[in-house]
Image (cartoon, rainbow, N blue to C red; front, side):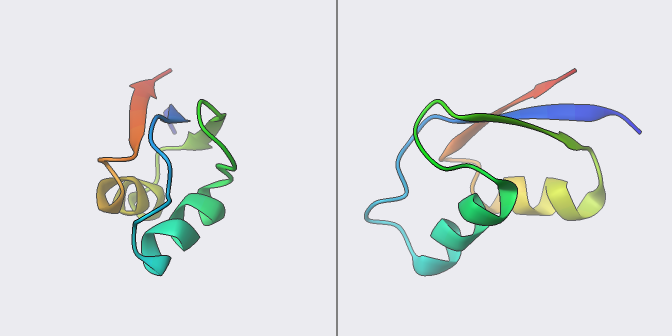
Length: 59
């Protein structure tokens, strides 16, 4: 499968608990932290729910 790079560009402060937990589940801990994940439907759905907090790049 293809991989994607997820970069946190905004803080989770002042956002819902659900969005904060999604950031944590993706492995993002602080601003400008980067993780690489497989491009599965589950991961893409998580990214879509917090698309205003992250930037996504195809690898």
